[in-house]
Image 1 (spheres, rainbow, N blue to C red):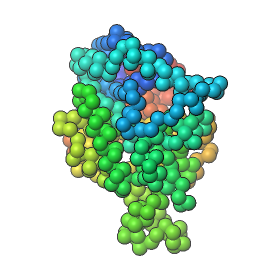
Image 2 (image 1 turned 45 degrees about the horizontal axis):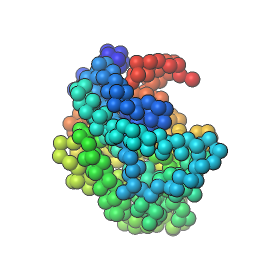
Image 3 (image 1 turned 60 degrees about the vertical axis):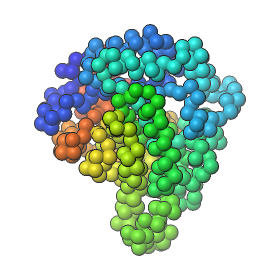
Image 4 (image 1 turned 60 degrees about the horizontal axis):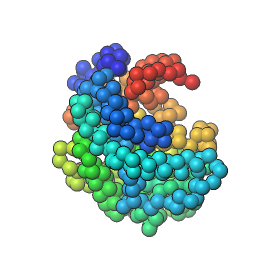
Length: 398
């Protein structure tokens, strides 16, 4: 789709004001989902799709969700697939996922290189879709979407579940790690660097969504010992003290401590990051992460000021929607922000012009937007009509 149709008048005005060359010229391809549907499983299909994207706009970023034939077995324990040999439809879908990928690699070889070469031939940038900052999965005893045993779990988490963010009773939110633990940072950094170096990627979009079971309460998780140690240093209170629960300032301090753990991670990641490859992180447009994590402060201003990232990718989906209809909006409580529910969310153009735009421009960082996010669609198209910009199709919003 031509650039003039991709951006609204207000978006183009903001782009000119801050000198942004692109904001929505980014297209995410979840290749695994395409393979499940029998698409892009041959070199010809991949090259055809990349030519289509290149013809519509050459100055574009393609975020490629890389499939690895071994399912990242170096980093993750893979569940025994026999647990999916049932008549339950969701179990059969998981079994088909493994089988389809195996058949594709066996018959076609490694198509990741084909895709990245085709992206570059079309004059576009190829970025790795960096999964896993808060998406380290869970043991099979935990049901994904309330229906299916998890198929993966990070090996470090299997060895040490305490690496996860904990509730007040010592129960983990599997998959969501507390990065004040150095071993959590080291494990994830090594994996992400190896993944971005596996192919000739130009950079990585670090996604912060998760498949983890959501926190139903905004204050449910984030009570690890390292968080408590830092809380005591700053406030003199432990969250085990009765006074803590009557002190709103101490609550907010804990939320900031939780958010700063990502800053600690990004500082270490930047030191290890390959030269010449971009690093952009996806976040919601709210001040706190919201579901499925909790009231965790987003420390994005520090990230751009310290140049820990090369840009922000706004309106990245959190993963909350993956649990519909098992968990509905009415079951979430005490959240300060929830982009998908419109809680704590500023107007879209206001955010571009007065919040994220100035900070990114001053730091020389890119500002990118997930153009299919619900809040963006409603701001630009009035919530009545959404062009499917990636495919040149259109659909009505239900």
